[in-house]
Amino acid sequence: MHGVISAPQPLAVEAGADVLRRGGNAVDAALACAFVQGVVDPQMCGLGGGGVMLVHQAGRRETVELSFYAPAPLTATSDMFQRLIVERVRWGGWRLKNRENEVGYQSICTPTFVKAADFAARRFGLTPWSQLLGPAIEIAQAGAPVYHHVHDRWMRPTAGFADSLERHTVTPAAAALYTVDGRMRGPGERMPTDSLAATLRRLAQHGAADFYEGGIARQMLDDMRRHGGLLSERDLRDCQVNVRAPLWGRYRGRHIASPAPPGGGLALLLTLGLLERLIDASTAHNGLEHTHRLAESLKLGLALWKARSGDPRFVAEDPSALLESAHLDELRTLMSDARVLNLAEVGARLVPDSRDTTHVSVIDGEGNAVSMTHTLGLASGVVTDGLGFMYNNAMMLFDPNPGQPNSIAPGRIRQHATAASIVFQDESPLIAVGAPGGHGIISGVAQTISNLLDFGMSPVEAVSAPRIHCEGDTLEVEARFEQSVLAGLEARGHPVRRSYYSYDYTSGRPHVARRWPDGARLDGGADPRGGGMALSV
Image (cartoon, rainbow, N blue to C red):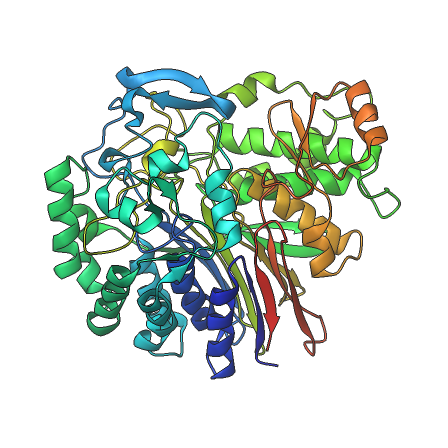
């Protein structure tokens, strides 16, 4: 077999699968997929965003993390938004006057996706750059269709933040792309993405340098200057793709590589480390004991991650020390069946992450593996006329108060709940997994890994099973949980919020690529909450 690829957008999965069929490797497939994702799911990701990629090279037996999160502009200051705070919103976010950190030009951090794609293609790939962009160009030239899952996310409100129509009419170019007759475009309608097609053709012809120092850069910077954006020539020229070791943990005898801070791998690995001490094969899946212990593990993992990690240039905590067995054993003593951890105050300080993110998981026939999560935050609403892509709004997810682990600083990277992970059986990749979905990425990926390794589920079963999310004190559950389990949780002191959706977005939308230990079989699973597809070729 050539490989397996899974992502939330079928057209993007097909593009990656075609690359695998033509002899490309896992990195090539992931990049071709990612460029199409930015066309068909343009608020989740794209040329104006950033993210993280874990790459395992089978021939070299080496696993690295490419960190390309969007940094704050170099003119940003720690107190630039403090005087604009209006109120706290759910999970400790802040609504500002005129939504300065959320929509519009002041919300934009330096886009790094294109630089990272170019770096990965040169260092790890086999397929020519122009061929990687070909499927995205073709789809954009025809006009990208609005898929039902894209429209569904537009219509589901995010409490405390701008609604879709407000966000997508911030600039005339955005309104022309995503709205018609004063409404969001509906499922089956086509977005006029010809300008994006032209930008992608320029990148295919002139390379990533055009985005950071050439004609595309000049168009972006002129737009920023005219509208008060912080992005500068120096920001584009000096932004970096950081190649570093991932954060490593263990679960059920397997090694797991996950994003180091400011990514969310620490939260994932803490959660799994606690869960390993709290459940075993005899625990009934999604029964009272399992759900209670999972909830406690999740909220403690997320709380410690938020309180004790961040951009490593600003936060000195060693994340590996928090994952040592003795520390996990100590944390385990805090947890019992008789007492619920009260983390209401911690929950009130948590900064929300965005659902506007996407992911791709790939393992090829040679055993190379990629897990990549990339994002626009909640998307700024800003589209530069003639370029056709939306910029991130990563400034929104910084803490507007100085002196905190996630405060604003020039060039600083905010905390990201990314959990793009690779699970190893001995030295070979067994699972590539990750998800979009803000803090729900952590809960979704943790439950997916546990479903696979603890409960013997197939990838499709693992991503489809009913899930929970828990940070702070409230335990959020999908509608498919039994009422008797919820009553038992409430009796133990859990405030429970039961969704009206059977497949909710609260716990992320994981996507899995799996290589069986014998190397002869490859399969995958796409979360039905996200409209995706897994394809083995």
